Image (cartoon, rainbow, N blue to C red):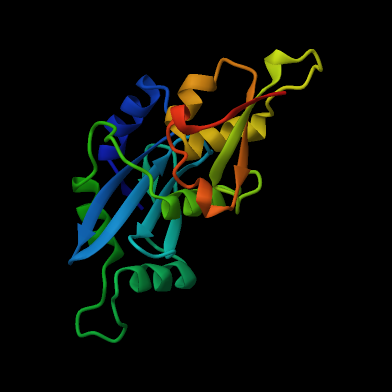
Length: 200
């Protein structure tokens, strides 16, 4: 068990900015990774993603920002795979050394990060979001325009907060649902100005 000390300041900044998570880049021996620190679930989660792939490793961050470095055999193998490390080397791979190096690279503040569609898909799957395979915004439905008592669901709000935080910030206090699709023609819909609004 080691303490990921630099997550503490990052946690404070995520909380202060009323966000859910932070993503930052990290390179280990020329292997490019995306690291996601998510404070929404309990315990907190640290997601390691190999760039330009769907290879991921999800780890718990326990009270006091502690991380169990004694990974299960399966998780250890996944980490080796992510890092392109072949077994049987003369010097065994040290998870303690890897996570200490990662800890030293953790930013103290939330970094601006542009989500790729592949990253949105991974986040949706890992967090088991509503209709997890649908990650593109098709349109918005404004329920306030009709007196039908319909409203945006918590599942829909949670999904939008994770996948499109900028859109969420604009609609979070409004009775608006986001309609998702897996049609890549809608992948350009990342700014709210581009998205059609339908009156519910």
